[in-house]
Image (cartoon, rainbow, N blue to C red; front, side, top):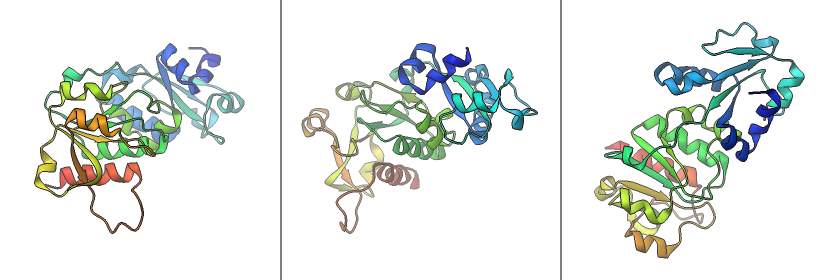
Length: 242
């Protein structure tokens, strides 16, 4: 891939067209190398470095570029001098999720929220992340950075329509005001856990059609709602606490 093409990977349409995304910074490159040790897909990455990282011992083809070229390729204002171009993973299939629980995010918009949620799912393991149409691209550089490498370890499925969830997940839970407490024993028994858009939540008619069971995170109600990533973090912790 030419350097001019790599610059275009800041945009979703070119990530999809070229089938690659940017992995920027020392920590993320290290995480990608760890993932490549056990997953052949990530072994197809390519590394670009400035003189600061000229002697980096890389398992991939490495190209030395100037500081000026790095500034043009990087998404950050002050690049560290190292980035990788990694292939997008193949689209995950719902059929491969048999027996695995899932977190479904409906039109999540904030890259930081999605990155934080992926970190939580990677920490606990054993769950996949489903994204509805209209959600932020998980391979957006801001999501990749905020995931701190978790994006290489969490099974991801994008463009999953809300009304198809029950085809693969018979029992669905959603976080909502006025439901049972997530500490209820029943909370553990669902196949998919549904979380809504940061501002609008999930349409109530869609929840009714899915037959989703409503749960809430008990609190003092001093504020109107929790941040989406915080809500997911607490719910996933509760699922793993027992």
